Image (cartoon, rainbow, N blue to C red):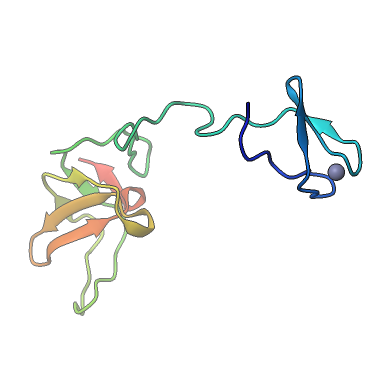
Length: 121
Ligand SMILES: [Zn+2]
């Protein structure tokens, strides 16, 4: 049994019902195979099955050193982070807004970067 049958993709009727392996819409007669619930494709088990890659596709790991490949603005800093700045001992995190690297940068302190702006050193 499938609970919470999806509404009809054609007419969005909610009174769909199951027939064999199909879901049937009583309104327009559309029949389709319901999508399996949950994740699709690769199994990204809880949390950390994710691969973080740098700007050129190298896989990054906790403890790696990277180089910032483009100048970054930093709140409260007039100069920001320059391209070529080396960052040691990164930590991969599931940060907000695509920031997936947690690190400390000399002169700036702890911050989060996006893996797309660094290259493995
Ligand atoms: Zn329908």
